[in-house]
Length: 220
Length: 275
Image 1: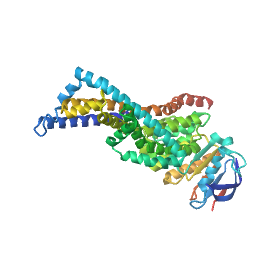
Image 2: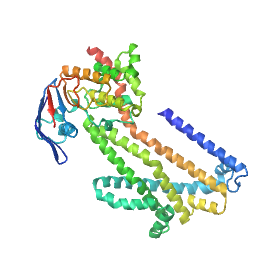
Image 3: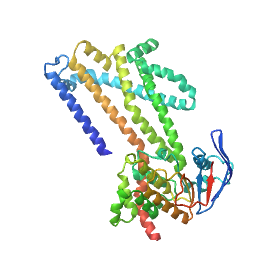
């Protein structure tokens, strides 16, 4: 899936880590660990920047190979919100890069994740038979102004949007940071399901979560 | 969104009515002389008099507003260009910032004669002054806004990998709409105030500024208020048109997403068949 050999991670002219190597296979997870400022997020950005210019140390250009099927959740996710769109459109825009925009509606797992992320908003109506699951989500979120949601709720919307593109590789930068306990568990279960389906995961996290990584890349 | 617009409109109408009521109370009481503050009904009647409209509004107002809109648009375009240039070349920003700070500190009663002294007592002098002051107030907003668009473009590009067309529709156009919301009303106000002040100071015939100056000296307060009333009405009309522009800029993005939503049910059926 992704082979990285002796990748140099630098920001501006400063080298943060002169040699990073890891091999991410299908259905596996790799955790990037390290202190604040060690270059964890920069490592992910360096990999993604491969779409612009080839990066020394990466065996192939990941964007050229997996461009449409990479789900990237940035650390500064707040910059990627569209305040002029309603909450539902903020999720739907994540499907623009997929070849089939409508695959989203077939993903029951993602719909379930949305239900678990927003139990107060969606769970009561979920008792009433609602088929398909997305009808209820659309109906609710179309009325929501995303700027009126709390920081944690906005993060969940950005996570749903990130995962809406039918990814083969998920690159998530601190996805658990502002999530409550229940949402953390729900995201864990979802990611584990995706790994079982053959999707790969490269993530930055300061704490151990439910997922067992095959390798930990230490940036210290 | 529509109900919010209606609420805002309702609040504006209520506050205007309150002001008119206070005005009528003051005017009809003995607190202020009617020669200084004529009653609102008298002013409203004068505003719609055919003779008054013909002599003051049709020619003077049209000419003044044409120049205001011209200076406003040119001022904004030049500001946008300089704002973009300042991001690329920092020294342009350092060099011009002193000039713009000076311009912002300069009252129009001083700025207009300065421009007239250099360019002559022409309408072009008042227009040039108006363009300059619009630039002084808008350039920094344009620069900040272009920086913000560039920052969010970078963040969204890596997160969503949008095509160039979608980047333009979902990032650049809405960013421009946000900028427009922030600066349109203020910059138009500056262009209008400077142009009318220029007309008053330089006494151009067939102009709102000159009419206002004459009515003021002759203490023809009903006529003065009637002209100001028309001025306010035209300014509101132009502001309404400009406030609709951001929605137009956001429309293509909303249309694309609405189209995606519309096709949902047919896709659901297709998925069922596949199963």
